[in-house]
Amino acid sequence: MKIRLVYTPSIIQEPLIAEIILETGAKININRADIGAVSGEMVVDVPEDKYNRVVRLFRDKGLKISLLHQPIFRDDARCIACGICTLICPIGVFTIEEDWSISLEAERCIQCGVCVAVCPTSALALSEGEV
Image 1 (tube, rainbow, N blue to C red):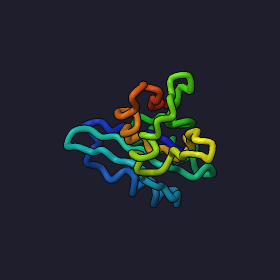
Image 2: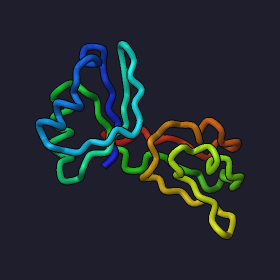
Image 3: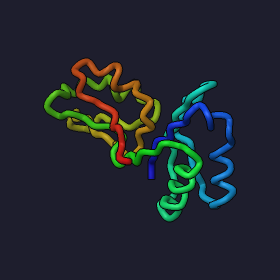
Image 4: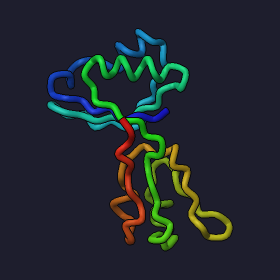
């Protein structure tokens, strides 16, 4: 399950991911990380069977968490199927199909925002997630 972790200044220097992996045995995959000196955000995948425990521990350690059921949304009424998203996405979330339509595998999205920035019709948006 994909979640977004938001770090605060008081915990940014703590090895929280490592601590939780060691404590739970969960294989946590970091999809994207933007960590600075005083704040940070990560998008990670957590195994479904360990999700509740991992989320509870992250919250106990002071992280703000949101579940990303669908990390990216597309407004089909605005999409003109130009294909720019298929070229720019570093993960391959978008694919041009044989009928020239654009398919979207939202669950693969790491929320880098590159496609949102280049979409000429603003048809794409990142999810804020559920708490």
